[in-house]
Image (tube, rainbow, N blue to C red; front, side):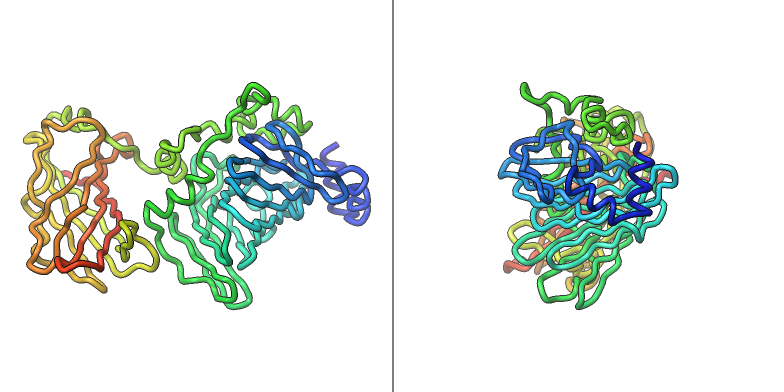
Length: 418
């Protein structure tokens, strides 16, 4: 039946359109729902969207102040929207025999996240997402953003571990009639304002990323009225087994936790990033020495949040002695170049972590200079590639002693040993 529908769509679109007026075409499933979510198909009355219920071609979906929704289309493309959002499934054409087709959607407002499926994997040019201020062209990837107030921020997340299509890293191109910007680095994005060209690509700060992902990161759970979020009912309710994704529709959201406090963990899973180490595990490392090194960008900080266009580059070296349970000292230092240059009075002082507990997170003390200080600079040790504390992330903060501006940004580096 699915193949017949696909053939009708591909070979006789006018007939398919006529049929859809009488009976909207089922193109996927609402794989997870929380709060008030409504949908309206052309020529049909509005309806309440519940987990496991079908979604239709040209559906316009809106979420309430507490509403969240994930939609899984037949080719395993997924769209997630947060509260007070509006999404229109403008066009969906899919031939399951060849994976050929087209995906077109409009995001009028709110926070969103999408993961490409089989259609875009076969031909990236066949998927397009539009906003009121610009169009997003996709090259097999995971993307998120926010739309509202005459502007949009759009960030490339990468394929992520929950990508059903097992796609390689892709990219996005954001464009409007004023210009275009390509993004091909995970965690980088653009801002677009009405009547202006998209901004140059910039690396979003952790706070900016969390601000976007917090609106779409929690998993809608089934309640007493609707408990189908946990399993295969979503696929069977829609009549489309291919809408189950990996094993069932609920699995697509399995990595997400319903608590807003777990947004950071969700973001880490999506990026395939390391997890935070614990001091107990770091203390248990019997001995050896090493050095963490990393580099990245820094930004202007306002109200403690650092973001916008990069102001320059920052790099760090951090010595570690697992036997002596110390970090810093020796050649440990942070260097900045660009708008704000720091290459002296930048040594990281030695820290003994033998009595610390909980997550491997701590503030760092640097020498500082007569005209600036490092107040607020902190360290996080990360488990990566199966190695305890195999990486370190330093959230750099440097500020003039006479007051603003403050600059900063998180920089991650790997561990090397002699």
